[in-house]
Image 1 (cartoon, rainbow, N blue to C red):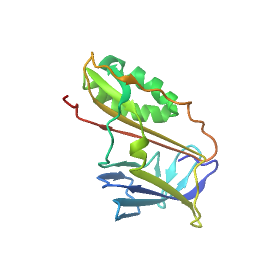
Image 2: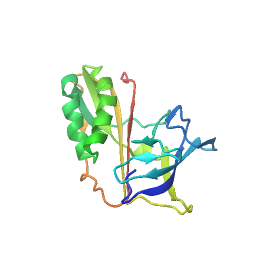
Image 3: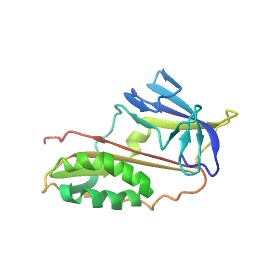
Image 4: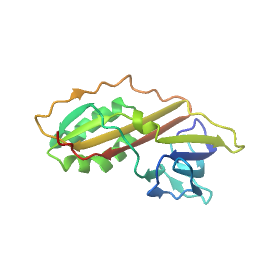
Length: 193
């Protein structure tokens, strides 16, 4: 969360499913008809630091849980030794800054490198409807991000000779004004056809 100037916010996430791990712990987490809602009251700084009411700082909010994800049809087959340079290139094209890309790579590269070849796709379209965010200011008024960059990766083991249609990205997102960034992913089992 990158506001233009330090700002008090309540950040809420609604997930169609459960939240199996959340850090820092939300101040409020409830089950809804659709799944789970969690909220944090934070002070957000332009450098991305989030500070809770006790004064403890966090670089981001982490959550994981099962979400339904369509199987992507477009993507890339990436060899083990190419995992890190591939991610560096693609994450920059998708709008992540160096720190966000480093956090993403340290989390996901070991899982990609566990396979000799990995199918990788960055398609957040079906995921985005499963996890939605909202923000309100200290008075409770809605705050809409000027830019919301969402990077969601799907991976699965692949074969060297597997043919896939390459994924084409649009222009790199522009960070301007109040910017929110989310990155994550899922690992799917290889289908046997």
